[in-house]
Length: 306
Image (cartoon, rainbow, N blue to C red):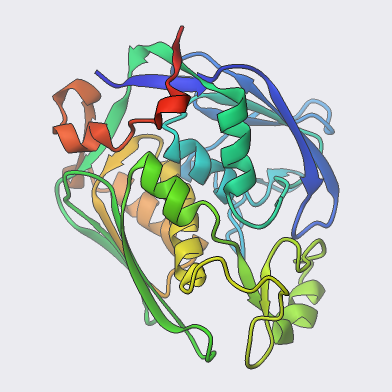
């Protein structure tokens, strides 16, 4: 049986929010079974704790935000993606600012933190959301679909009119090890020509070559170049995993996206949950072996039992 997990101990990290530009300290605490992932804006007084799920998602322009108005936490998708990869279901996150630190623009720093902090197994079984009917959402020529599969698979296609990107597709079969090796280090990216427009919208105030891939009209301008030839679509997969983790369960289903973004991912989650005939919630003990095996941790990360 696959059990719920949390962090083995408290861990703190400080960094800059890529959109807010503000220095933020985030402290992550172990939590009990069925707690979920909850955020507390400790810089605000008398504001309710925000539970991370598809219903609490607010803005989805260039990031995924939990909550709305003043009591909100922006850019949660990279952290949630890493939590999902390690099968971590329960964490209490205290944060003293409006946005999760971007670190290097990928999930790599959070992977390192989880490895250093360790994982504790809780005395309660995980539950899986098993897709049994296809569900699709479309906005213009962009779309996202989830359909039956014995484990989580992401089939992502991105299309950008840039000679370094063009059309990229990757089919990613989820496992913790595959995530660490193939996805976690892929960074967010943007076009130099869009910087002024995004800043006028109040975005990317903390963006730099240290936390994003930046492209001019012809090439990547970061001195260290790309970490993968198709780093762009790999980052889209990282984002997608973080966004669909907001369903609140481990997932057995295939997600296919075409030119998607945070808004489409959230629409897909909401439509799936609004279609009861399209899914079942089942105990991990009743699942096929390969869905369980995807959450096996690398040997050095074998969790303690609590």
